[in-house]
Image (tube, rainbow, N blue to C red):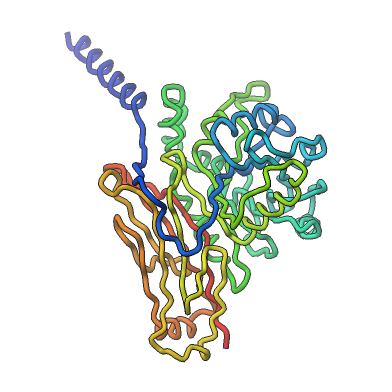
Length: 412
């Protein structure tokens, strides 16, 4: 009798767990209506950056992966097969029913993997300095890949010269989880991929600290979210599993590229469009978010000083001696169209990696008076301001969105 009762309890708990996983969904409810009043509007293009295909160690052909990216309504897709630019040489770059695709390259160096975006000629693996020099010669950009991935970590955090960092790398996100959560991901993926994938939306604290610490003067390092999709997990020498699928990973996170004007949409102008996209990424004209919970609506981040408007990627050259009005202030604004009744949210403003202020369930407005700027100039040569947006789903809080930095450089 006791065994029967125990069996019923176990089966009941298993059934409840199955239903909990099967029906699980988290959606951000956004407000309808006009966009928020950004003073410097941009065209927001969602990009899937860094994925692998059958050109290297991915499990699907480039054509099939492009179809998936297009079906998920991405605006831009950038592959990064290992140590090859063959997709470009094969003429695959261009427009696919509104999706702009071009090829990058993930290059092995003596310090780790370096992502090259906007390269026209293939770069051979090798010494970091030589690889970086070749990227710069092509006026392309260099991004440190998965800096804290235990599988292939970055080995020298003192190097200079690179342009950006993969702050979010989904391959690192799941490999970096503790074994219990990895087990849960594998167990639940076959029931509800969304439930399994939502564990990837955790904050990569070590990488964010690295990103904050390397901002220097006029050399701001852009942050991006990379998919790093292979869908080709090696179990043994002969057994590989198509996990996670491209469809699931492409839906988890996006880098949102902010352009003053749209892309051409013409295959004969793809070189110019590649330059537009890579220039925006290099300068930090982008933000990144976990779009699996909903594509951001109306997000903006600005600083206003002396009637000049600055956005992420901009550097304010502040000549303190030229400010005659001692009541002058820098005002920082940020907002997003989340419905706070459905999803309470917090906008946090960070100054040089430290949380400066927060705004709950409403737009952020923060004033930095002139005398405070003077005080900060005695301590820092430059300031870096960025935004994080946390969203609450009941008891669960997820850092949903990260901006790039606005820099303030003190002069004279």
